[in-house]
Image (cartoon, rainbow over all chains, first blue to last red; front, side, top):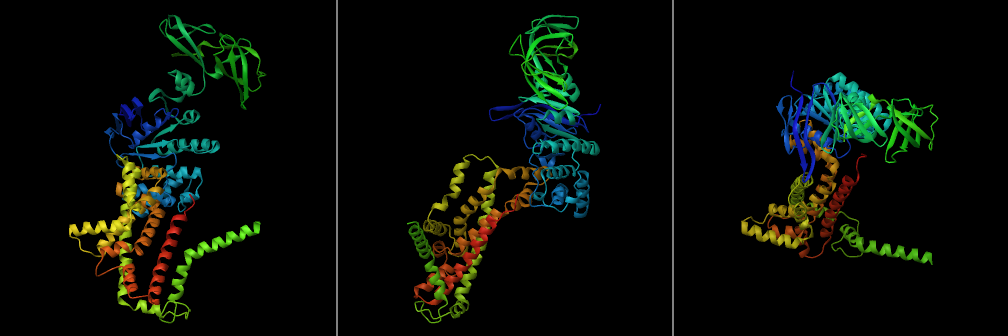
Length: 354
Length: 260
């Protein structure tokens, strides 16, 4: 097995007294699209800055292509960054911006212009070569920043919330293009975002971060279906969380006592352990018992029509601290104020240590 | 009642502007005098005194000296001011606020004190009175100004632009020359032209620090010692015109910004 392209080993970082990264290790494969997903303050941007060379970690090492890059300055490492504010050079033309990295490598003018044009064609902006950055729209500047970073063929492209400044429609469109461009150039992309939809759409490897730690990493499908921690169950998509205590564990089946009664499900937790049972909204059934596990009754608080479905928030009658989040079909006749029974299937419940 | 208030406002405005500009107007007007004394009645217009100024070797060489000192001392001020502004804006320095205060402090010290201090210092160090000494004096007074102008324009939004250049492989000096200087160009030009303006008509420091070769303001002062004559008006008008030109240039470079 070949060594990973990027190998982050036991990296910790502090800003003064504040510990922002706590012993983070992560391996990234060549040609993959990695998303660092987390709320603000989770350390994801600091981790990206460490990869880009703008921050030297307090502890730990970073290897890129097998070489120790921990203290190598940005100019000398095989990474380039697409900044959140694009950071285009305002006094240079778009062509000058894209050709800047090649100019620093000593590539002559004609070859530089040709490569810059190719890179601009890749991002669909071939016509903008002679324009100035201030003549472009936000989405176009984003593309120029991407072309500028890709043209010098980095081993890893780092993207710091690249879609954060765009409006929703443009964001979804750029998201698809980013994925297509990544597939075409084959460069490993590492992309920081707090948008879980972006993460699910783009990632080969989704890394969920919280409070300076990696909570979960894996394919987005796996992270969504079987989140490793309570945090990733609530941050990567929504979940209803049932707190409980294991009363019995045998033969791969666990029985937990919860506010809505005992629930048996497949899993392995020792008796007496505090657990959280997470259930995705689409797995919660409302109305007459459909699932094999009854979750009591609930009073519907809010029904939000979302086009293809209705998002239902309901408060358990048994425990008012328990909020059910469910997805009902668009045709459902549920209304706020209704009291309905709630159920689900045992295999859809995610057992998490609490 | 309201008409009276408006009238009073107009009278007040005219009085204020008259107070400020009448001396200059009188100076320029009598530089065009045809006869030998810059006193009423006005006998011009005539350019004979301008011709006299331009054919006076001492005045023209002083004018060239002034330009030389202004350009070179402003270049030095703006370079040092830019580098110190960049240092303070981009790096965490111990006692940064105190050091920034110290660097701008000469703005509040009288030119006379600075001139005398330099005179004593140069005497002690064995630096003769010269245009170079006066030029150094002008750097002392103009560096804080350049620093303040450039530092005020050096915002955080340029940090990522510099980072991007570094990220793309630029060495530090290339980042400065190819990115920071062009991006800061309006502030740098503004600092340069304001320094030029101040150096151009600075008298006290030049007077204290030059001897045989001297600058135009000192030469005008020499001229005035032999009494008033329209030639002094003419040379004064020339100095004024150049100052106006530089201030206008300063305003244009600082205020006319490209749309972001």
